[in-house]
Image (cartoon, rainbow over all chains, first blue to last red; front, top):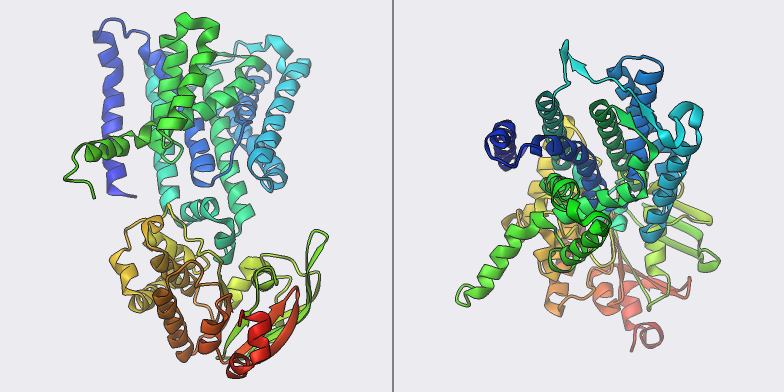
Length: 324
Length: 237
């Protein structure tokens, strides 16, 4: 792995380790570690989406469905059938993998708006299933009394322990994705994004690589769903509605689709905006997302992760002597 | 080495190639010229497996390749340099080259990959100089060199190029064609598609003229170049 990435990862880990203590000391930040748990869970999805959208160049407006599949697999498995939570997490991930394969193989032949529409429809179908299969999912009322997780006999039932657990998973997934993107497969993803014709001419099987990226992002979303229900101990369909899929896309666009850092940054910012900072706006919140997205797309097409480069560019323009 | 017989290709209902035959001998350098829309790129795409052939055969060293798919064809030793260069602009030069060797995977090909990379850098020293630069920031000529270098990384025995002169300055075109000549001298078989027919016929030994989906003429490159009728009708005087 690249040295820079490792250094950044260490700084991030150190910052995260100190975060809960900081939040305790600084007044007004008491609720922040809890919000960060959600941000971490969403980061798992956005990192997968970053690989799919930013690197492999495909779009999905249906990832709330995979989050839902993971969440419901864990919820039904543990609350209804009393199975081991870790087993349910793996079963959910496997189910998502299979569904992603079944959906990905035909839909990833589509491009642009058509792919967006197909994945959108998939998300809506899954949402309807969660609502209608009352016997299994509990319908619109959802499922409650979902047990928490424990690791090596240690119960992860406090905000503090879950915070450290979730963000450890985030760092591991980050490390995995960063390595993947630097590998032969990662280069192939970017080649498919860059030019499908050239990628094919290099002997890269483009449909198989698109499906691989799609499956990876689906499994990560499913994992996030499982971690989510074991923390909040409750799930209903509205958690994984269409707006959630859109929100995930807003996260990666805001952070910058070409960067795993951007994926985390976007997830954290949007989570704080919607849970803490924009709470006062209530239903007007959506309007503000729209405005933020508009501003980002127009002025920062590379997202917040591209901001340092932009600032360098602006600074360069300010000094005519230095302009190339 | 490469033998195309009675090839028919369709875009949906459009009959783009109507029974085209062509042959590239081992160690030869053959050019295919013709006007816009004649079907040159279509033929190359069909040969490289990017488009399906409805009818006819494409043989590489006697083996049918028309149903192998793009991957299988690259693995058999035929590599396409696509039209308009199509370098991966957001990737570094070195990553573009590594992608060329996509099918030479794993540790056992490590030495081969390095050998090919040295070979490409030897051929185009500018690529080594700029190996950590993003491909999108290269000039047009350098991008074309990268596209050729990337194809060579697949260790092909026959290189197929779709309009390498497109959008390049005449001086750069001459340089690129010179490199192709040199590669051919070293034993690489080449099929070159060009709109710049004169330049292409000068470097090639044999030429085909394609017109609206069928072969209009073929012959020794020198003969085609000196045939006034052909020059007037197909090659713009």
